Every structure is written in structure tokens, then in C-alpha cells.
Image 1 (cartoon, rainbow, N blue to C red):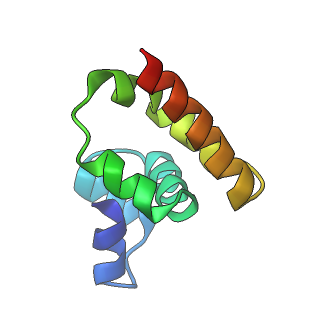
Image 2 (image 1 turned 90 degrees about the horizontal axis):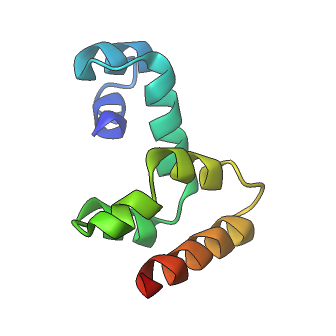
Length: 89
């Protein structure tokens, strides 16, 4: 949502998005990092997810941690590990 807001008008800043969505600029920065660094197919699955266990497993804090991993391979590995854990519950 905030990503689309920023892309819609390139002159908008993360501060503008924070004001629009009533969150801090830092939160917008975190959300942007998550969206930009996690695999598109995973993000699409999570957008429509209503499974409470899955949502708890992939909390914002956990997604930010995964997004901060050094490369795509490590990020996918972390996602796969958590997915297998969540599916066992």
C-alpha cells in the first residue's frame, strides 16, 4: 500500500507516506525493506493469508529480520524453515 503510494508520485517521500498512513517514516522504511527484499511469490501468499498461526510466525519483526539477511538464498532458506515449522503446528 505505501509502496504504491510512493510509486504513484515519484516526488513523494517516505515521510509523506508516513503522514498519509499515520505511521512513522521509520515504519515506512521497514515495510519498504520487507517488500523490496522478500520474494514476490512469498509476499503474494502473505497478502491473502488469514491463517493466524502463519501470520504469527511471519510477524513484522520476523519479516524485517529475514529481509535484512545478506542474500536471496539466505532469505529463501529462512522463509522455508519457518514455513515448515508453521505447517507442523
